[in-house]
Length: 252
Image (cartoon, rainbow, N blue to C red):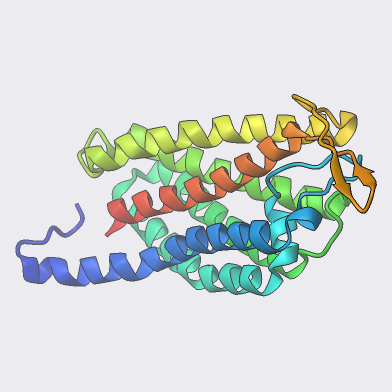
């Protein structure tokens, strides 16, 4: 059984470590919010343009990253050492608490976290790649699938082995379940809307707005499908960061 603190003096190093490691996912969540808001404020037209000619109201994170590349690169590179530390702690925790036959899945879970972190760094470095290129699609799909696999494996291990012996706080488990549900729901809707827009340029609703500037008329079509994709992408990133905070809640 893991060592249990017996006084506030014993708790202090754990709380300090938890707060330090929490800076990793917190700064990623805050940075993504900053990047999206700055893009909407300073580069709305270019970041929300889609190739089929329709405009949307919310940029994808890749479009926002191309608008704010330095902020994206700094955020993704800064999170890597925190992810390595969290994965190492999680691997040690699983080794100490899981039965022998389940430790392999604990190692797979920690590896998935390292994979997500590495893909984020690669994404930031290659953010200027075309949005519809095979490399971009594969890296984006790999990031979301690996993040989903990490959360699913972690949750199954928690439910199957750790909750019955009281190693997981009930509040943490309650929050994990809801974060995972919303994450996979948002991911399913997000990718559905992406393919609807990519292959059919499918708008959920259309309207025309006439803007008269020097006697010229500009007609714009609102593509809600790609807007939903951008919002879903942003929500899944934020939820993954929240899930990492619940993992730290359990580990330290």
